[in-house]
Image (cartoon, rainbow, N blue to C red; front, top):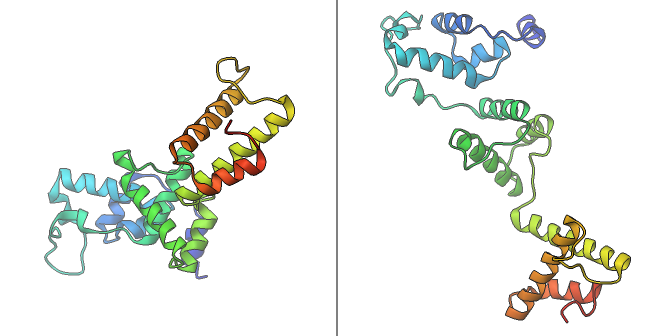
Length: 219
């Protein structure tokens, strides 16, 4: 590790937006500024974009490698975040909000899609090892089971709960006279299994499990 990298790793965060903008005018890109100041890339990017969009003339103040600087076609929006920048933004979101982004919230859609894509790549065995290692280290619980596996696990959990209830009480749970929310939940669950069975929509393997664990459940 060289001296510059060591300084960046141990330096405190710098949240001065004036400092970010000054560094940008000196030729540093938002990703580099975020790394030096140890702050989320998106914070730096959004601040600079906002200032330049509000006053495009500011772009002319930036030091460039050529003699005649001009605003890129389409503005700063053309700059696509790297995988690392997006992953860091996701980790920062999780630390700030205590949860993962939600796809139905407009401001969180991009991060949600990024996360879902990483999960899909991992399931297909195509997520690079270094990227998975980063997500494992910075986003505990980011890997969730596919929807059908989560539903199957919940179904088995309800079956186990019902079996325990039957051993304790010797009768099936009832909704109207239930003494608590657990009994209401189990009463609703077993009623739905019976209805599904009568309609012919109960999966064969689930009927077999019910017959095995709770003989006579469908009477």
